[in-house]
Image (cartoon, rainbow, N blue to C red; front, side, top):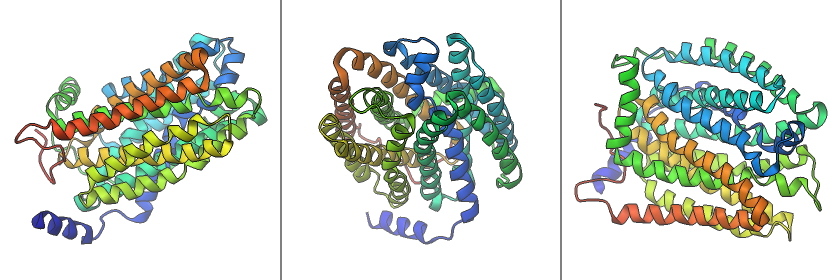
Amino acid sequence: MQAHAITSAVQVSLPPTLSRGAVLLFACASGLSVANVYYAQPLLDALASDFSIPHAAIGTVVGATQVGCALALVLLVPLGDLLDRRRLMLAQALMLSAVLAFVGLAWSPAMLLLAMLLTGALGTAMTQGLIAYAASAASENERGRVVGAAQGGVFLGLLLARMLAGGISDIGGWRSVYLCAAGAMLVLALLLGSRLPRLGPAPHRMHYLRLIGSTFLLLRQDRVLQVRGMLALLMFAAFNIFWSAIVLPLSAAPYSFSHTAIGAFGLVGAAGALAAARAGRWADQGFEQATTFGALVLLLAAWIPLFMLDMSLWALVIGIVLLDLGGQAIHVTNQSMIFRSHADGHSRLVAAYMLFYAAGSGLGALATTAVYAAAGWQGVCLLGAGVSGLALVFWAASLWLVLPGQAISAPRSSKTG
């Protein structure tokens, strides 16, 4: 324990290798990239009306996005361990701009779903590629802090996506949301091409198919990745159970809120970005399990005030804050631990980890709209609480069931095979 404390103290005291400007660029670029994946959530009722999709099936729009996310995690994100990361980010930003314009011009449900799938794929590839880029550019002693900052940007981008999508849609319709997003990605491409830090060549050159296979090898062999991935699956399922359903009661009587007002509710969870940054620092100092426990308790407790939506909008605000605080703290702690477990291969690690995210998000989105149609908002909250409680039980079981000689915490340093 003393040696561990001394090591942590030395790591914290070492100077950073990334400038504040570089960290800020990673955070902003990650946030802008992920926003494209979530613009649709406060627009589901408008999409349902425009394309004549029943409310019980409108979750397929989010589901298609998550299918794209999963495909990107398997086929695109690992490329960061093979190709020049800077050029890869530039190419993906340009392609994403074109796809977003395609969304804004969609004329049928089939075209909309295809466009959303491509948006999910490229938005996810960029977001997770940037986080892996940041982890590789940072030194070991600051990796948790840098990843936390990038993830904080992701979270703020997610929140602002809902607000901006609602506001722009109220002014110019939902199509204008995606046309504006296409222009924003063109601007980002210019910044990324000139400002991202340059990294050395990949330490291990391999064929593409072997690269993809090694991602699944990590899933099969890395216990830290397995445990933290399952926590991510359950946590993101709980997140999407809430965010995919909340537009439905708030847009209906007695509230009948506009898209702008519904999107603004996402801003009350901005404290989650603070949790992301702080959780990264705690992970650098070795407090991963304590942070995980506290975050899981917050995630479960959030559903109590959320259940009271019919009584008070203040209860909704409190619930959103608790949900986002807990969820973001878990997410950053997970990423800090898996990045620490290997000295390289960060793109494959984040790809394997985020496969759990895609599965959880897709299942949550599909389940919640069906549950809302059958049991209303209270049914949604019971579903979310059940998934959150399962995450807490799973984490506790992972502590008790660890086999002799195995570790549930990521080692301070090791090499990727």
